[in-house]
Amino acid sequence: MKFAFALALAPALMATGAAAQQAQPAPQAAPAAISDQEVSRFAMAALLVQQIAADEAMDEQQKQAALESVLQQTGIAPQRYNQIAQRTQNSEELAQRVQMAANAHIEAAQQAQQAQ
View 1 (cartoon, rainbow, N blue to C red):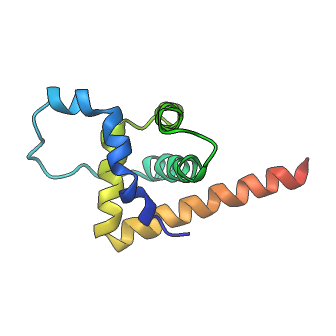
View 2: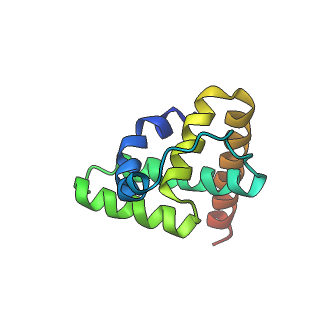
């Protein structure tokens, strides 16, 4: 699975943090490093965001609420999610790290399901 969807969903996620972004000036400093823990949380959030986006039973308002909930549960601010999503488009190394983390989450979920 590729994470091209993450950038496509960025406008929806930006809406969750629009007020916060308007209150803060755009950062001019170099982007912060992304830890393995943050990559893992982003990968989990991205997997869940993909599921929400594909859910045709949900209207846009429900999807927006679900997106906000996913980000809150994974501990990633909407702005940071968007930053990482954009950086995955420009960094093959980061995209590979995210892909590996997503695969680990998928494998863990499959193993948990098989154990039941």
